[in-house]
Length: 172
Image 1 (cartoon, rainbow, N blue to C red):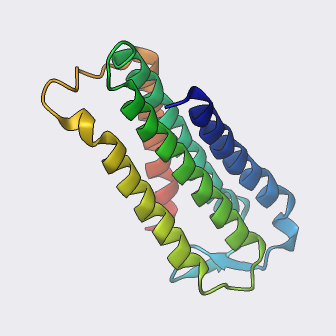
Image 2 (tube, rainbow, N blue to C red):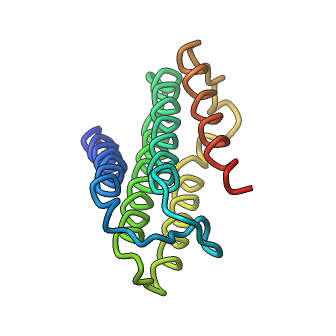
């Protein structure tokens, strides 16, 4: 896999995720007073609820970045490096498209596009299928040396997982 494709997918994902955060921050006043909490319920507009989904996307991107660093280390000199980088590029692209579609969905409120959720679902399923397809050779025997994370990466990943869990608590 060409490193430029990985860089492009990484750039797209971070641009989409940060762009959605900025767009929702700047467009806060334009949003309706009742915003979606989930696909099935709404609640009063607050800064926390508006910026929650872009924050989730940023946490996911940080997790992908941590995984990328670990995969690069473990597959630096193996024939499976391209597969590992395809997995990461697919994850970046999936999170980037997800961030873009979710920002679009929020920015056009109160209009609801009935096709947007099925498209988002297809993007997520295509991302999962792409990761499975690209990562399948990594699952073969002797193809997967032990992936290790540095203490900093472990702490960062733990903080991201806690952040993702914490952002779900207000919905319970």
